[in-house]
Amino acid sequence: MTGCLKGDFMKIRAEANGFLRHMVRNIVGTLVEAGRGRIPADRMQEILESHDRRRAGQTAPAKGLFLERIVY
Image (tube, rainbow, N blue to C red; front, side, top):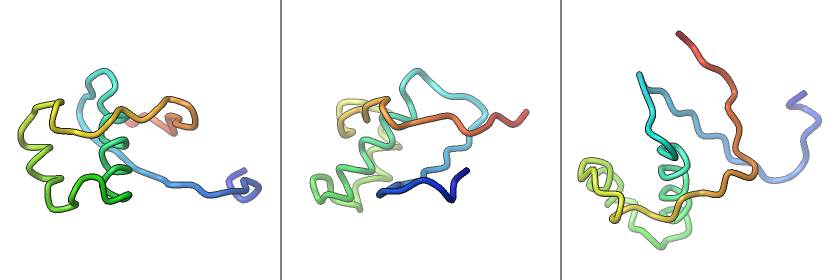
């Protein structure tokens, strides 16, 4: 089915042993802002290690995001 999709897409794979509510959307939003030059790319590790949501970018909207699979 992937072959029939048209348009611009970004695929982000997130693996963890657990996720917080909106965690992946927060990470995606921050990566998008870094890609647009609004957040310097070299600050990404600092943002993640700070565990401070206020340092990160905007939460990505749920529209267009989907869960591909869960592995136990």
